[in-house]
Image 1 (spheres, rainbow, N blue to C red):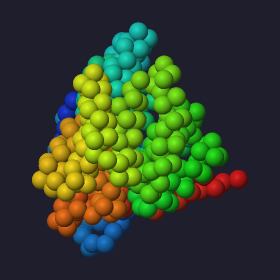
Image 2 (spheres, rainbow, N blue to C red):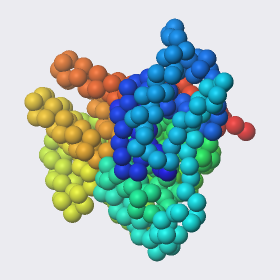
Image 3 (cartoon, helix red, strand yellow):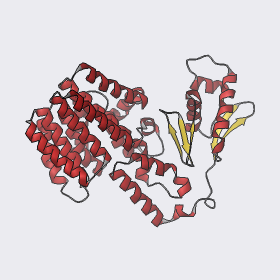
Image 4 (cartoon, rainbow, N blue to C red):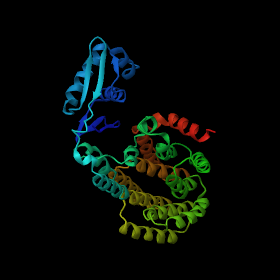
Length: 383
């Protein structure tokens, strides 16, 4: 059974069913799920789930009772009572004989991978999540790449940091992108340059950081001329087959670099017109959202406050619709750091700073920031 835990909304989803829990119910279930198969006493559960509170043992029993009622629809999941000790969560895995026969159909696996690739291309993260949740019902095995990527789409930093299901080298790129969203762009730029120098990333991901991700860091670190210099390499690479989808976002990064440098409006207008033509041909949600951010920042520069706010809010709505949580946070990251350099009206600045901080808080980025820093720093500085 494929189970998805939504920390920000306290929801559990499996087999096409979504169950809403109260915060403590969710925390208790999450702990049992991460440690499924192990038995915990009431005292241990009180210590793990209510560490700074003083509930009685009956609290655990009451929460277990409510969890069993709410999760009863999920037939392969059970919270067992171990007499004289406590509770244990078990999940029944289907036998080969019981499994959906299409799970072993190679043509089916290829078809589903192509569907995921298409949703990925168009920035339809929500569609990817729905498809992933229906894995058991539809009868297909998740492609290894997308079994990791789906956690990145949700902004599931906890899983990306702590899972033992896949090695750190396969999670490194996703962790790096999350890491970039926290803190000073100058320090993040230095870190990414070190990552590239040490060739730690897998080759396709190394290339993506080298020609794409680092462009924004140059810009936000106050070095737009370096971004324009790197763009020469980027435009050479994206002429190659397989990089066609990079064209709109590369053009948007170039527009942002020129905005930062103070390039005249008539030049920015020409670039914006070209990007809009690209997006008519390739209506990718993430790229549309990123372009609207750039256009909104351009209106900020022109002190057209109302138009700027409308465009920036539209951009965030598009990215919310896409379901790509890191891309929405990344948009706010761009907005806030641009406003640090070119301050708008104070109320507008506070609005986007508060949105940025709230998004990071809700997704657990603040809580996990130190752990993320430690993991990545140790990997990069290891001999």
